[in-house]
Image 1 (tube, chains in turn green, blue):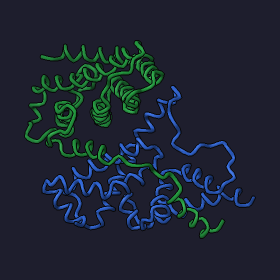
Image 2: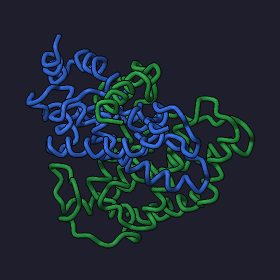
Image 3: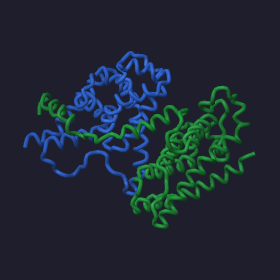
Image 4: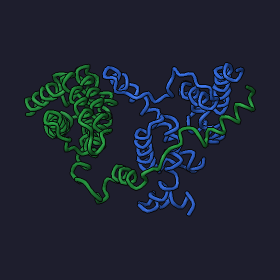
Length: 210
Length: 177
């Protein structure tokens, strides 16, 4: 096959290779608008979920994951904390542990509630009552944490990676998911002991509060 | 209204202008990403990520290239970030055998040249596959590709040449039959 023939064949792929189906532009725009312009009045869904989770992610990055679990992570100098919000003195970060832990605890509680609801649904053979939008927001927060240079503790990394795996599968569930799919996700949670690890971390957070 | 007017409107907080920009460019961005990953849901997710990032950083677009070129460079960045995450997730999903292979299925002998070409294209490493996809399939110039992938124009040409060589070698057996 010469160069011209190959080029011709490749050009033909435009019409035949991985031709996408109809794009739900309106539905996708609602997601884009909510995330890109968060001060807009929400068209549907819970406003406090859409505002609180990005705030949780910002605070977590701003104060450093080291504030979340000081018993788990190596001590880092305050100057090393990444993306400290403007106007917040570095020395204030330590004094701001209480609200920070509260926000992080909120994130862990949400994930726990979602997984408990999924486990209940799997056990009872009922379709889970979950919000794909909530799962997607939690997934975004999880990924922000994973990409944070402060999240270096192996125990925390492993937990976040397992949460990412589970949340990806939950996000992909259709509105009325088949029971085997729900069961499989619950098995993932069970095999990796995600819920006990989440509860341990929540317990540590509660004792670390002043 | 052309892109520059819509961009000015979006920067000023005009939500309708932002929506028009999105409507105008989303289909092509989505098509490019979908051809890269082969998964509709992933492609929608990355497309959304692209536009969120683009609107958040709209002040960084200085008009040195076409808006579509800049937007596609944002798309490539989100795509590569997403694919790195996907590789991490998929490595763990493999244990449960729940992952679907986004590459073309292998193993079966396929006498049709077009089908084999598609399969071989999907098997190319990303750094070689993207220039083929962007140049030969989507029709971007090497200059545009350079901006999208943040590589020199010459590198785009070299990678395309290498990709085409590999494809010709892979297809040599079928063509000879």
